[in-house]
Length: 72
Ligand code: 9UX
Image (cartoon, rainbow, N blue to C red):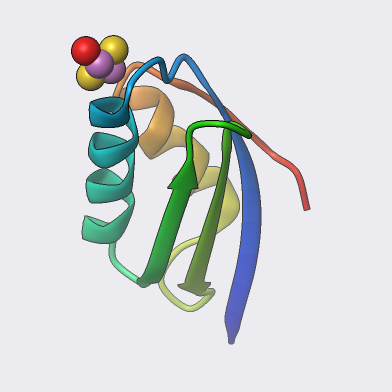
């Protein structure tokens, strides 16, 4: 099943942070699309639930040194 999740991402302070979070997300298995916005601290991720879930997405963001929580 393809799901879309919105995540609040803390600790991003410049455009390069946004690029690294997007790159990390796009390399995860099952992630089809990832867009991160600095102004809102929100990231939208489209993913296949057969390969990854929202907790693993949060963990990947946090492993990169940012904070993350699920919005909806
Ligand atoms: Mo910008 Mo982000 O200089 O981890 S890359 S602060």
